[in-house]
Amino acid sequence: MRVAVVAGPEAGHAVPALALCRKFVAAGDDPVFFSAGRWLDVARGIGIEARKLGGLAPREFDDDSDSGSKIHGRAAHVSTALLPDMRDVAPDLVVSDIITVGGGMAAERLGVPWVELSPHPLYLPSKGLPPIGSGMAPGTGVGGRLRDALLRAATAPSIRKGRVQRSEARVSVGLSARDPGPAARLIATLPALEVPRPDWPSNAHVVGPLVWEPADNVLDPPPGDGPLVVLAPSTASTGAGGMLDTAIRALDGLGVRMLVTLFDKPEIDLPDWVRAGYGRQDEMLRNASALICGAGHGVLAKGLLAGVPAVTVPGGGDQWEVANRVARGGLGVMIRPLEVATLRDAVQKVLDDPAYAAAARRAADGIADVADPVAVCRAAA
Image (cartoon, rainbow, N blue to C red; front, top):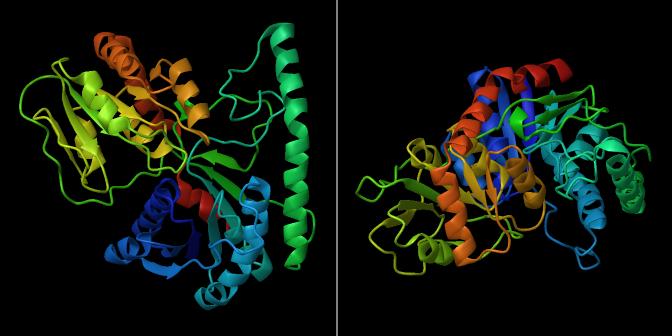
């Protein structure tokens, strides 16, 4: 099966898409990766055909302050830019990242089935949940259900506006106003991070985190036998800043060692109990006792797969939602805002209470209950 896999250049979306490409290759299928930036060379370096995803740059009249316009209006433009390469690739199936909507539109325009890839939990609105992004647990009792209904009513106009924008974008490229949606949805998370809902889509399949290590090198931990803490500052534009400096001040004197995963060389001097650099995150987490992260789903999922509890410092976007799910599940502790004393207390709490590590190990065991993403895609083709 020839598969076009489309994702934008943010690490949280490009890396899961590449991980899926690797699964296709292992299963004997032929993926072509559409993205931008450094990930094109990364893909080619591991033997995956890669083509540049055009149309991503804002146009003069684009309003990026309007998320609906940015996602849907830009998607129509991206789908047009994609068409020549997509025709040349002639895929049997298209897999399109959830925020790179143009891949799905291009597939429809070519009459090719497509699958949506969510590199995080399912974020569709639900009649049984508070609005996604609120971070709230589903309400219980009459008062809780009423609260959720009122919150859903408050967000309904924005949802309707987004649907109108989607319809207008579709019509602008010759598609029907009504969006039929994907043939299937890959929900690339652990069951422990999902929330039960009464209207789970029949075509949505939890397939486990799509994780992969772009780095080959292993970053050795600092010497000693103190607990190892891994720090993964957020790579998202909406993530919390200043995490490295704050973590060094917070953990100094606790007797821990710290490994910091960074794309670039740190701009500050590091004490001898800290090592930082670009290396395999799975190896960093293998012997870790705690993970500090911004609640980006990618590194958080790696931590949970390794049975490592988390201290989350959520920024914007979906990080607030995920961080609250981690806290409610006993998988870690959430703090916001980022402060030295608060971070120190949170790390100490996770290290001292074995219940957090036990919950993380149970979350890791949930990988046994997920679907095979390649099998889901083959059934949809």
